[in-house]
Image (cartoon, rainbow, N blue to C red):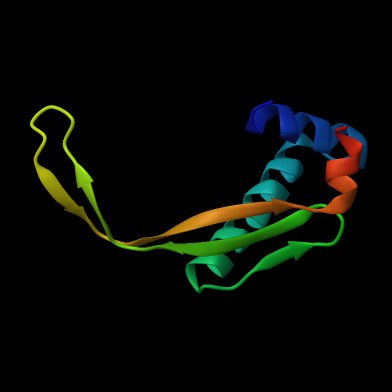
Length: 90
C-alpha cells in the first residue's frame, strides 16, 4: 500500500474528497516529522509510538579494502507497534 492507496481509503472511509484526504494525511505526516525533529515522541494509543533513537559512533571496516573507518553517531526514527496493532495482525 502506498500513499495514494492510503489517501483513497481515507477518502472512502471518511466520506471526504481525495484532495481533503491528501491534505489531512500530509498535515499528519508533517506534524509527526516536526515533533520527531524536536526530539519529541508521537504516540497513538493502541496503534504505536514514533520516537527518535540515537546511534552511537562506531568503527566499521570497508569490505573492499579492509580499512577501518569511523562512522559518526546519528539520530534515527523508530516505531514501536502498540498492543492493538500487534493483535490485529496476528
